[in-house]
Image (cartoon, rainbow, N blue to C red):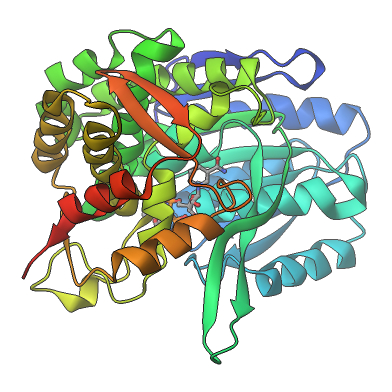
Length: 397
Ligand SMILES: NC(=O)c1ccc[n+]([C@@H]2O[C@H](COP(=O)([O-])OP(=O)(O)OC[C@H]3O[C@@H](n4cnc5c(N)ncnc54)[C@H](O)[C@@H]3O)[C@@H](O)[C@H]2O)c1
């Protein structure tokens, strides 16, 4: 790890504002924050570690905690959507409580979005809230999950027919971190499929960018797509910075996703209402010839959801088809799925959308593009438009 100065992006939320540090070797910057917490009375740190993170980063973090005078306790998680659950949450609470963790002691998340969401919710709820530092280790968690304070887990509910259903991120809280550190070096070990998944969220940002004051982000990503897909470190640092700037500015204007705003943070859900409806279908795979790839990863579901939303918008309000065509082209260049085999029926999918927490009282609330780079919240979308969206991503074989 080298010691270049990291890039710094501020999330302007008055007393809850914080910095996001981005760059090669950025993890070293955590010591300063921990020393300041120690001076304010912190004595322990509860570290939630993703088992996918290479050990040298875990060691590096533990030695920083130690050198700041804090005593670390670690809890390890091997992430999956089913383990993003109340059971894991409870186990983490039991572990943190057994250490005597006080209200000023920090929780530190070192991992992808699942670890960040769970650790964040532990921090939000333990003793009515303790500080959390997010150290995201996947591209997706760097550009999206670690920024903005959304924390929580999925809830599995039993249905009358004896089956169960996983409701994504149904339980949670807004709890802003004190600091976010995105050390680009940690991405070296990230598998290509997870890299692509993170790029899906970057493209999502591009699709809303002009409407939220970040005109040029989509063009910049398309112009640099070859370097981005090769994961060249300098371009990835710039990619993370530009994406985090967008997310930080949207969050600063709408911290808690005000549903009456018809914009703001809700726009970040572009692709998500469609995507969440398919993400939790266990048998789906991004490559029909390889069933071992199921279930879909979050970013893969969002890629499909964005395509469905574009095509649905063509039916809902005559969106120019070139918007969806360009999106499909970009996602295919990245290697993300734009169609999917074995999709369940439209009515089942619509039922799932109605149960998504982003829908309101039985109406279909979706985010549709209205032009390139600009999206809009649509309340009461027609079920015909939604069906045409799903048809467009349904692969016949
Ligand atoms: N809070 C938010 O605002 C927000 C936003 C977007 C997504 N999310 C949530 O984030 C989750 C998805 O996050 P994700 O894509 O990071 O998935 P993830 O947390 O499942 O991590 C993906 C995989 O990468 C591994 N991994 C992590 N860091 C690694 C590294 N440095 N090297 C090698 N492997 C590594 C993990 O062990 C895991 O197998 C979803 O649950 C989604 O709901 C939350």
